[in-house]
Image (cartoon, rainbow, N blue to C red):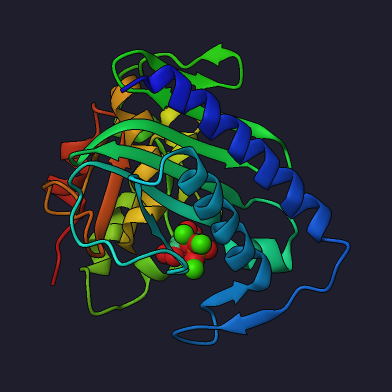
Length: 263
Ligand code: IPD
Ligand code: CA
Ligand code: CA
Ligand code: CA
């Protein structure tokens, strides 16, 4: 398989989709809710996913596609070439803030991440990686992450972690928040992952993410030495939803051991 050629195809497709999304702001957005009042989807999320599916099927009809909005076929194995697509990650930011939303795409072959992309649509910034060749932020190569202490870390974490909840001992998370240098919450998992792989954050944790939130990001993570697992420290389950942590390698296990206690 010619990954350079697939990479070129993927980038052209992502830039074109980004332009279509930016242009779509001048039309009416149709906003609907999915599982609940804060789970949003728009006509643009769906149209963008369809755009990707049509492009990929024209490129190679044997490639399978997993997309958040379910506009493609049902995929229940990662055998062969599989694209994992989130057409807009951070739909609430898209609707409310008109910024801080990403296109994120991973290209996997037999379950192994080969190409990964996180594209900040409004800034036109691309984070990407080719397995074994390295990772880039636009034209600059991303460096391997440098070691640091937990006290120097800035972490991506949602405010709901520090309130009593059914999944995690929040008292320990309060300890974590009091230990690190700072916390941030951006509202797009892909954006937070992009920040971890480029050293702008040192960890990001989530109680529940789907394969399309992290598929592209995990490919980039591997190239810079970031560690991405579920909160048990195991491989993330790419065929369902799972807990998630991505972190600088010097603090990944330390966070799991000292601050994460699943209930
Ligand atoms: C969501 C965002 C959000 C995260 C949610 C995701 P969506 O993706 O990444 O930051 O907290 O768990 O579902 O629905 O906007 O693509
Ligand atoms: Ca969604
Ligand atoms: Ca998402
Ligand atoms: Ca989405």
